[in-house]
Image (cartoon, rainbow, N blue to C red; front, side):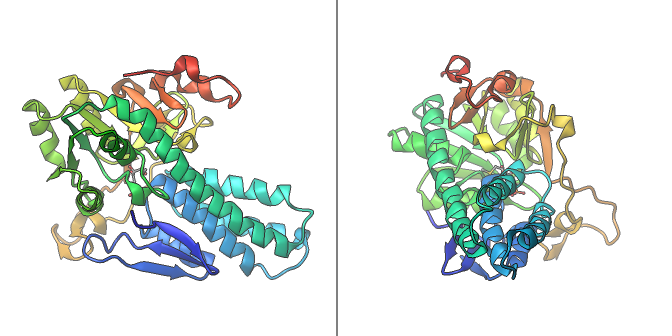
Amino acid sequence: MIPTVEWKDGIVRMLNQTKLPTEVVYEDCKDYQTVARGIKELWVRGAPAIGVSAAMGLALGARQVDVSDFDSFWPKFEAICAEMAATRPTAVNLFWAIERVKQFVQANKDKSIDAIRELLVKESQRIHDEDIAVNKRIGAYGAPFVSDDDNIITHCNAGSIATAGYGTAEGVMRAAVEEGKKIHVYMDETRPVLQGARLTAWELMEEKIPCTLVTDNMAGYLLFHDMVDLAIVGADRIAKNGDVANKIGTYSLAVLCKEHGIPFYVAAPFSTIDFSTDSGVDIPIEERDPREVTHVFGKVQIAPDGVNVLNPAFDVTPARYITAIITEKGAFRPQDIHHLSDPKRDTERFRVHP
Ligand code: MRU
């Protein structure tokens, strides 16, 4: 596993995932603006990784605010937080991380600005390290849903590089393999940005997990021919009613799975659940540059000049298509997610088991 994003000697190093799989390139970000640009331009992408990058970016931002008293610091820092929040609208982990950092700064307002700056670096590293630990717990809860010799289908990339490390959907696969199960994974290429072909294929091959690449429109063929036992995907935002926003094309795959009686699992940390969003229709969906659709990775033109293009980056899978949502607190029926909004509530009685 290679680092997705890290703090190193006052610099945020982001893995530029737009260069994968042919090149492994790290971008050295010396200011929060470069981190924000990296999130927008998908150097680092994937909901948890976006949150961790934003937190580190804010630690950089605090160093760029050249004042020494809290009353002058706070409005400037809030403006940096707002800029960071404007990078990508769908993954709620971005807003979760920004909110956590803001509350952390407020809780330390009595300290010197220099001390706050230092503490923020540590807090962003804590968010990073916690994410890896959370993913490992998701893996532990998810692995029992995978049986020996299973064929799994996944969409987009919810692997190690979509998180601080280990991955969510791929974390479940990794944990199943660590338990000694033999699995085989089909990954959809995931048009238009090809996270499945470029990133998931690369990661699974690095991990030596047997895998086969298919185009998005081949999923129906696989299910029709009984070639898949279960689907596991990640999530960008889970609404209170259990609806899940994830990479465009997730919904079509979920409908196909329902038609064929194939279990459809979502693996995500609790920070992806947005209890303030009632249902999937309320989730803001990012609309990206038409060029992602008209050109293959910005290079080869595959559609006429001036064609009308729609490019929503995510879709919403209604709760009824989802077998279970696997989190670090256990696996739950999406319909039970709303019971979990109180962190003090015992989650045990809502857990589902394989
Ligand atoms: O546009 P992206 O690449 O950021 O979209 C990523 C996804 O949709 C992932 O499935 C999701 O963020 C979960 S990552 C653990």
